[in-house]
Image 1 (tube, rainbow, N blue to C red):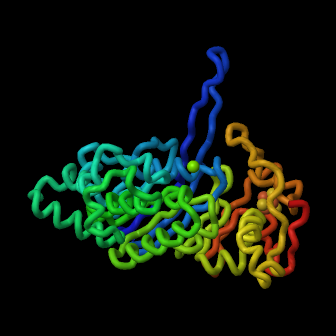
Image 2 (image 1 turned 90 degrees about the vertical axis):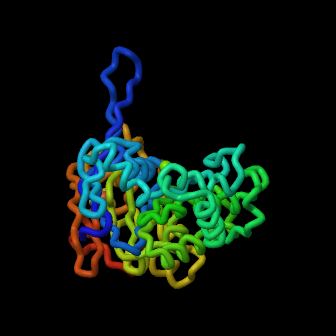
Length: 337
Ligand code: SF4
Ligand code: MG
C-alpha cells in the first residue's frame, strides 16, 4: 500500500578489515529481506544476536547505508531521499532504544527531555503550547506531572523507558521502531511497558516495528512476525499461524524454548533447545544458513539456499523440507537440537 512501510530486498553489508595486508572480509548482515507494515499494524522481528536485527532498525533511520534494496515509506523510498526531504518526514518515524538510562541526557529534566524533539521539529510552537504537549504526553505514558522536574538518575528503569517512549511519541509519529526496547528491564516491568506500547499503538494508530531476541515478548505485541537467521528471513507469518503451525525448523526450536511451560504446545512442538552456536555472519554456511544446526538437514541444504515459499494461510517459509510439505505441524520431533 502507499500508506504504510514497504521494504524490498533489504541488504546490508559491512566490510571488515583484519590487518593491513588482507583483503577486507564481507559481513552480510542482512540479505534480501522483504517486509510490509500497514498503518496501525505491528510487525515483530525476532532473531538471535548476529541475525541483522539492529542493522535493520538503523537502516530505517538512515543511520545505516544499504548494499541493496529499498525502504519505501508512504510511497517514497527513504534511502533515495534528499537530506531535506528526509528531515521533513523524519518526525513520522521514531525509535525507542534498548537502554533507557544511557539514551537520556543525565543533565536534563524529564520535561526538557520530552520537549527536545519539539524544539527541533516543531519550531512553530510557543513555550506554553510546548509545555501542554509535554504534560499530555507524560500522561499518555503513565508519568505523573511531578516527574517533570526529575533527572534521569532519579528514575527507575521502567520510568526511564516511559520517558524514552514519551520522547518517541511526542511528535505524533506514524511508525514506532522498538529495538530491544524492554530487554534491559525486569520481567514485571517489561509487561507494563509492553502493555503501554500496545495501548499507544491502538490509541494513536501507530505502525509498530518491534525488534527483539525474545519471541515471548515479540508475540505479545505483534500482529505478524518475521524470523531472521544470519541476516536471512526464514519465516514470516501472522502471529497465531506462526505459533500454531511453525514450519521452519529454526522457528520450531525458538517456539519450543518459549512455550515449554505450556503442556499442549510442549507435546505438539517439543524439541530440546537449539544446539550449537550461531555461526559467524562473516563466513556464513553455504546453502541454507541453518544447515549446521538443523536436525533434518539434507544434502541439498548445504548447496542451495531455499526459496521463500508463500503458503495459502499467509505464511512464507524458506526451507527445502518444509516447502515440500514434509514437516507436518504436529508430528515432528526435532532431533539432535
Ligand atoms: Fe534445515 Fe534444510 Fe530446511 Fe535449512 S533448508 S532449515 S537445513 S531442512
Ligand atoms: Mg542487535
